[in-house]
Length: 134
Image (cartoon, rainbow, N blue to C red):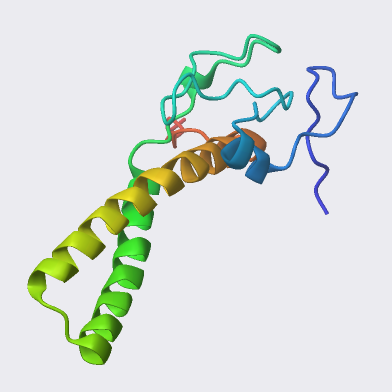
């Protein structure tokens, strides 16, 4: 079993906070301080507590794609169930599912982005490099 990295450069000290805390509570993946986000879904530039540079991580659009597909599937299943059970008008579907889809995606986006940045930090993920031929 690999050893979990610690939050100090020398290797001693406390263990890293669980990755889910970065998403749920906005905790820094190194020190656990609630400094990951500067607004609801925008990352801070760095952690004022431990100095970890958050701009070095590349979360990109990965969380949005998975959330859109997952939530879209769930909303589609629910919309079909409502249609076949209650047979409401199209307007009821539009007023119900469009706001619900947007709200669920935006609410889950913070958790997904925080989790992804914590996993990048924990696994030391970086851009792939091709070694030069010797």
